[in-house]
Length: 604
Image (cartoon, rainbow, N blue to C red):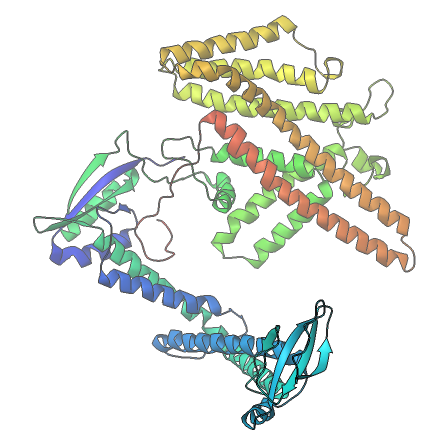
């Protein structure tokens, strides 16, 4: 659920300001909104220092077996920066040397000092690049010696007893011989390796660097709040939002520290930050919301529980393989064992466990284990399958793939219609005291009318596995729904909605039909798995062929799992954040509740 917020205005004297902010930061309950844009010299210095520290933090790679150097924290960052500068200079030098090396390589080994000496003695020698096509003639008195060539250029040494110019690209003489440049390149590369080894010595100080960066971030955060406070008649004040259930904590702190304060309700035109507080069983979905970086707005619906339930169902359909599901469960349990005590890793692993369990159940019902044909499965696994989902005929006892596909698509469309209906039922309940609720009631009617239309168009009337309602009733559902929506639009004087009503009905139809992707992606995954199984069988599982077959199976199923994971991100999340959320009125435009606190401190 989305926790209700209230507004806080907190007042103190300038002399109390520092202690007030320290106490407020320890309280961890106020999401501060700056009264004015924070700026100032001290804040700018703190921000620059934070960037300075964070750069040092980034280049240190943590190694569990590395021991701390014991270096003073104040000197650690400076030392790392010295190494950074040294590494940068060495790499720039190496780049310049390699460019110079490549520039003069076509002219071979020579000492540029010898050519300079000849020029001083009145014998002019120059290096040129002559084009092979339309090679210019040598001026009178100029001797040209070819040194090397490639597909387009001839590299030459031109010599004359008088000053001359050839209409081609003259190559500047290098400062050093080819071999000397090569020696400096090797020397510079060695120095770079030594610098990297110096970096490695500080791998054990990664935790210390993280702590230094955390303290620097805390300092910036504190100064931003301090400089963002308002000032009026020798009183400084700040504004922010807080959860209503923490109001007593603020009152107690205010009494202890002598603060002035005022509590206000959130105004209709204000958008407070969103704090989600859900039951423990819903908490795994936080991993997905954090990955995609969205949170519902404060005045929107919290769809976390439904998001979790339907994402797990979508996961099962999109992957649809009990073998993959068991593999994911094993990896999840191993991950939980390796990250025991790491609270941040648990929501994601718990989510994978839930979704994988659903995948195993779906795979058992459809008889899908690593793409192996149902008829090749052991009898006890075949006994777990669902005849309806396999398209098994009650009369003949034979399986029909077309019937199976139609039945699975039917289930997908039912899921879609139910998913969308839940969104409008939720909105209908919220608007029950307003005529606007008629609009959601209308969309519920049109959704089910269009649901049967989708079945007719995609599966076919004769293939629908349930008795159909008469067509006039289906048309009545759509007509009644459209009428209720029109009444709601007119009552709310939203006349533009009349213009877009036809398009909205088409969009509703498209949203329902889009749930067929659950079947399509799952079928594609099964086809890929079966194709690689067939390839491996063709190679054989005896002798050396077994190695090739094992490689094909590992590569093929590994690729299939990667594609399945992409399908979850593209399709499973989309159906929740677009199709469902569009009908529920959730725009995911909220901001995370981020109370004023020290770096990485958990919320109370």
